[in-house]
Image 1 (tube, rainbow, N blue to C red):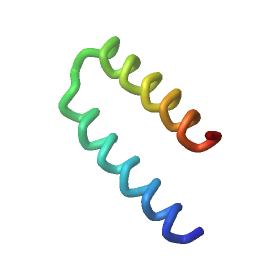
Image 2 (tube, helix red, strand yellow; image 1 turned 45 degrees about the vertical axis):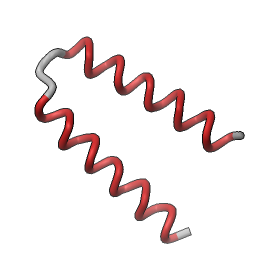
Image 3 (cartoon, one colour; image 1 turned 90 degrees about the horizontal axis):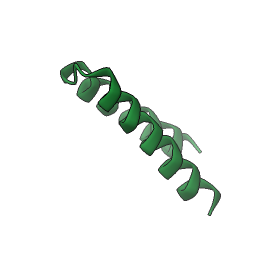
Image 4 (cartoon, helix red, strand yellow; image 1 turned 60 degrees about the vertical axis):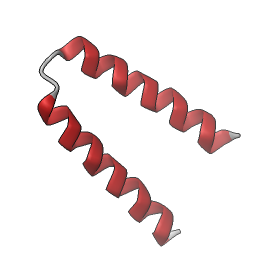
Length: 45
């Protein structure tokens, strides 16, 4: 369980770093929605 939480926190940090460079709010929102849907599908399947 600790490894999974660490993995999740690592990718959250990567995503926050990428969001620093994306100034367009619409593109950022689309990326967030895409990641949420993909993460949900991978976690629940």
